[in-house]
Length: 325
Ligand SMILES: Cc1cc2nc3c(=O)[nH]c(=O)nc-3n(C[C@H](O)[C@H](O)[C@H](O)COP(=O)(O)OP(=O)(O)OC[C@H]3O[C@@H](n4cnc5c(N)ncnc54)[C@H](O)[C@@H]3O)c2cc1C
Image 1 (cartoon, helix red, strand yellow):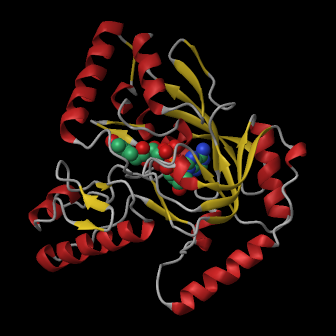
Image 2 (cartoon, helix red, strand yellow):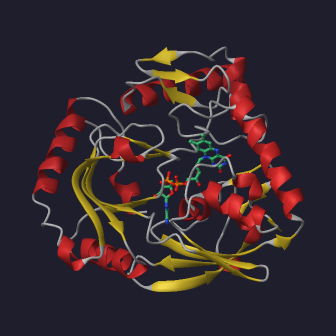
Image 3 (cartoon, rainbow, N blue to C red):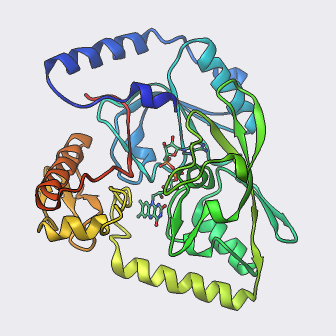
């Protein structure tokens, strides 16, 4: 996505100088013509307010479009003016660096969160939270996404990440996704044209605006009981109520990332306000005042230890975005 090119590692004086130059360039960013686009605009908005980690510096412009057309128009404006942009849902799989994002953050949420169905085909807006999708479909007696109830993201982020839990994921139920292409066009892309893999869709540089899902008719009591069972497991086995980003690392083939980090004796290890959860070692939690820098240092500690102990290089599941301070 556009942000991938903008993302950089934290580091020494050279990097800090580069970050400063970028911020100065961002200050020269043309004013965002809010009156042209339906939606909510906030300037210099702290992204910590929009991530489940409660971490992240400010976005120069934070725009929540009220419609797909407004989203498309904002992206077109950014492209035409050479303004960097990125898309966020509920910010539940991101670590935004402390310097924030010197461009346009497009937040897909309210306004793009419709839900309807005809027989087993469900049409879902990208801004709908996954726990709501899971509950509403389960209560209507449809199976296929009820186990995503504990994934605190949006449908758009879920399709982009191929979110999955307890044997269900988007790749298994998607019929097609409505996407905004990098050229600013809205198109329907069928499932077979999306190269889904573990926690990825290959839709980089696209914005997911909605999707069609095929779910299975079932007894509402059975689907809601399944949902409740999964939620109970989650509450017991993960730091459900603490600020975090879910799994930090992807699971390698050999063993789960959580077990690898745990075997290195790292549960409870802290850097600043960031801590490897003592409940689940693949979660880093913000104990109240963690910076992105604290989390990145802790990630380094875990990766280095796992590599030394097992020779396995852990790959990040969380997306690291934005600029160093
Ligand atoms: C407590 C907790 C538990 C979790 N458990 C799970 C789990 O079991 N399984 C799992 O898969 N994940 C899990 N996650 C991670 C996360 O919830 C999922 O990856 C979710 O799908 C991210 O959705 P989001 O809207 O929050 O995306 P964001 O975090 O906002 O964004 C994540 C990435 O998706 C991109 N993106 C977001 N919206 C769109 C869009 N509309 N179009 C295109 N790209 C977009 C962003 O640019 C970014 O690269 C968990 C997270 C937490 C905090």
